[in-house]
Image 1 (cartoon, rainbow, N blue to C red):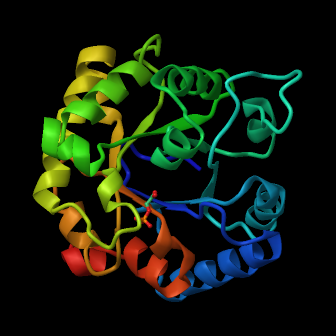
Image 2: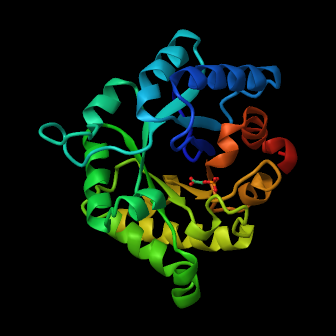
Length: 263
Ligand code: PGA
């Protein structure tokens, strides 16, 4: 699937939800819903990030039914192979036609103690295997109070981009930790400010070209009711959606945000 630069990306992070049978039913229903609405015209890229155990099944379905959704994994190992019990190599994900892999989600940083160094190693592992890392950054409410909204995301992104080449394809997701699953999304202006600042970090580390091409997403309590207000912002190129990506009609309405933006 050839994709125009900065095509809006609506990404559904299912987290630890939906087994492989539920995943099939979900993807089919989403596809039918969007097809009925004539919304599979390529103006928005749709990506789903199921659990590891669903990936082969979803890959087969997308392929067999020619469903134009991209596939992504929720994590990968920093290593390529070997004695790492329970880990999943980027090589295996690439073999399953994954296009994306989420790296450094705040739930990984929080529950699995993933440091900036681990995140940076995983970004390199993804790129080694031709996967596009979706690099997640975001501040907690304590960070927000102490340092403001940009300081922590800027530090996290700077660390994640160490050693990344200027021509590498990456996606960045600004996900304030306080907005994830809380029902309290950032305001569009807050999202715009941080996304613009993160684009500045990309410019500094990878150059102006990369900054102009890279998609910066907002994530955290995105819903059908607020997506259009985020997508109106010039530096927000899409959304990483958690809870609302598990409800077909809601996720389809998010993907069809242009209806609400009036473009
Ligand atoms: P949420 O999750 O949409 O449920 O807030 C977003 C995420 O964690 O990626």
